[in-house]
Length: 163
Image 1 (cartoon, rainbow, N blue to C red):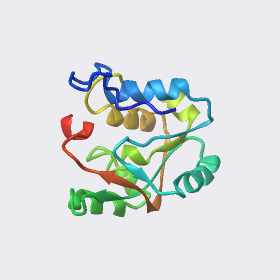
Image 2 (cartoon, one colour):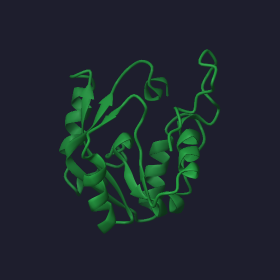
Image 3 (cartoon, rainbow, N blue to C red):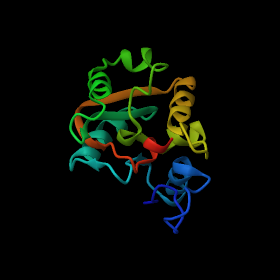
Image 4 (spheres, rainbow, N blue to C red):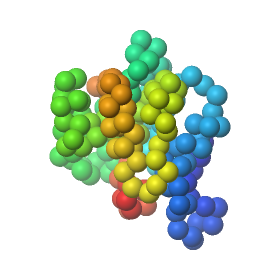
C-alpha cells in the first residue's frame, strides 16, 4: 500500500494533523502482507532490498531489519551517515539513546512487530523514535544488513527537515 506523506490533497495547506505516523499506520491498515517494508516517498530502494531483508526477517520475526544507506546529495549529514553505517550489532542497542540506530526508511519487519508496538504515534515529530523505543522496551531485536539498500535523500521538502 502506498500513502503519500500524510499530507492533504491540497498541497498548499499544512501537513495532515496525523503526520507521517498517521500515513504509515494508514498504509499498514490497507496492506495485507505478513511483512512490512517502509520507504519514504523521497527515498530510493535498491532492487535487491526486499529479497535481502525478507530472507533475514523470516529467521528473526521479532526484529526491525535495517540496512546500510547512502545519502543524496552526497556529503549531506556525512558524520551521521558514517556513524550509523559503522555501528556493530551490539552498538545498535548501546547507542539507542543517542539516536535511532537504524534509520526508519530502511525498516523491514514482520507485521507482528508493528502490531505488538501498537503502530506509530499519530503526531508530527519523532514518531519513528517512539516506535523504535517501544519495540526495544518489548525486548525486540535490531538487525542490520550492512550493505546500502536505500538512498536516503536529504532535502528541505522532506518531513524530517520540517520536524
